Length: 127
Image (cartoon, rainbow, N blue to C red; front, side, top):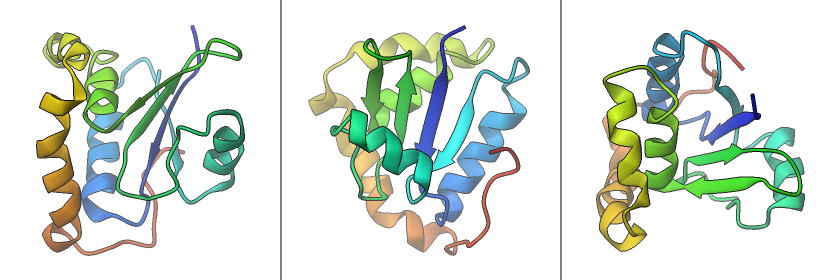
């Protein structure tokens, strides 16, 4: 199986809850998680400059060089859901919709996420 890495803001309470939710629904342990603030993200950014350094973007990276694929924001969320069992997998094909349709709700949530839960210094249960 091709490597799958999810980069997320490990200081965000909403993001940590999402990651823990994903871990519970990933029985085959396909997903690997790393902080957007860490060395893994820094190393991946060198290869894939499209990976943003701002912490308001969820990133899904699949595959190996030179065929790595990077999905951002809502497409990343839907790409992750496509890797989970039913019923979450059914949402995966929505990632093929254009970002102009998918990303506005994501950007709104990203803008208010720190008001929904306090920032955290800890990380998810599985790195």
